[in-house]
Length: 189
Image 1 (tube, rainbow, N blue to C red):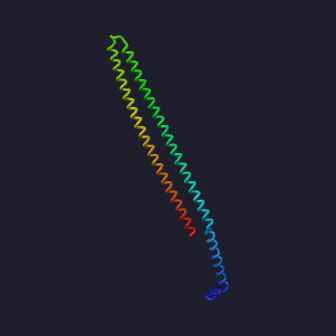
Image 2: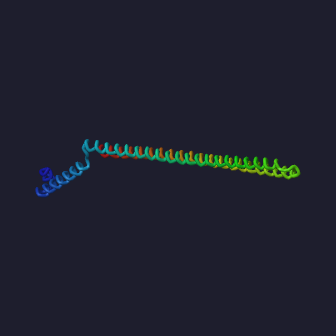
Image 3: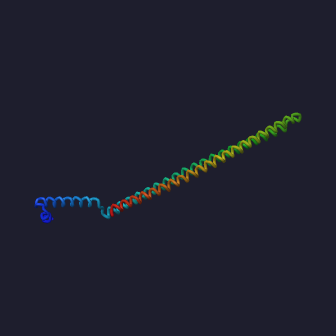
């Protein structure tokens, strides 16, 4: 190479300096290339680390999904328990009203005959009150059923939303992993 440069018009010292600079540049470039290159063993280790990380993410997602489902189930159970308590209270109140009305009727029917008309009036008032309370209880029961239906629908909506978020998260994770894998693949190509 030095002789070729001398033939082209360079003196010996200039030719040697140019060749020395080329050797230095080539060596530096080769060092940089070797630093960027990875052995197959290192590549396999990196892939295994990525797969382990993905497995960890999958386990975390399963745990998260189970815990959220358990929370929803416990809330649903709590609501059912509260509803059952309300129903029992309504039944107790209805029985209490019925018992009071029956007691009033029995007491009123045992009074003297000249107060019969007054007793009949009280009986009619008690019956009206009973029907009013019964209508109020039925109305309250309908309101509770509507509220329960709304809450169940809300819970279903939340559950569907969580499912959608989980699917999005899984898709994002898979695409991220694919992007990382493609990036690693391009580096080794």
